[in-house]
Amino acid sequence: MVSGERKKILIIEDEPKIVRLLKINLESVGYEVAYALNASDGCKAVEKEMPDLIVLDVMLPDGDGYSLCRRIREFSDVPVIMLTARAREREKIEGFESGADDYVTKPFSTAELIARVRAILKRAGAQHPSGAPAELEVDDLRISFSKRKVYRGATEIRLTHTEYNLLYHLAVNAGKVMLHEELLSLVWGPEYRDEVEYLRAYIRHLRKKIEVDPSEPRIIVSSPGIGYCFALPTGHEPET
Image (tube, rainbow, N blue to C red; front, side, top):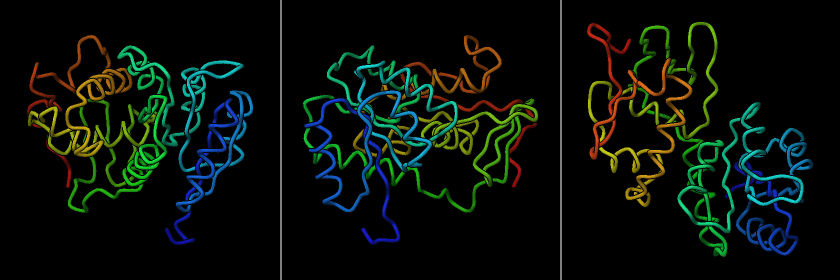
């Protein structure tokens, strides 16, 4: 990693041993590292340090990582990896619905975490093909592909990098059913192609943001057991 590409990682974790371990290993592969030992200091550090990625523990002495992640999402779309000692599906889904981009279960190897960090930073910095349409409008929802922004009427809908990338791949393939494995590979990477719960959790969260009635989705439509489709009303085509 050359100096011009040096990325900053913020660790929010209350166990000093884990902080030291992560700091040493992340710095050894070229990242700049800042840290906070509780939720209050962590929230302040996000604004002060302006990190490129956050590693966030679920259990903190003055709160939980889910609540902190939701607070961060009110003002930032910085990628977040959650650290959790609990591997149950419910906790994973709660993490995704709070705005996390990925999770790593304790105990973990530093090599695994570094691989996740690299993969997320690569996705966050990826540029979509120049041949993508300029924008797409469905009723009062407008996706500006050139600006990587989404609006309902004149109001911008804040999306994380992962949420936007998922919406992007659905929208540029509007009218086509995208297979679960296909979306997982495009958005998260081929190593995630079997993590269907990742996709279901993100689809639920995305629907809450873009659908008028998330319980009766009209834009992101399910094809049970197969995948999802960005549904276009008759006569709607992407604007090139």
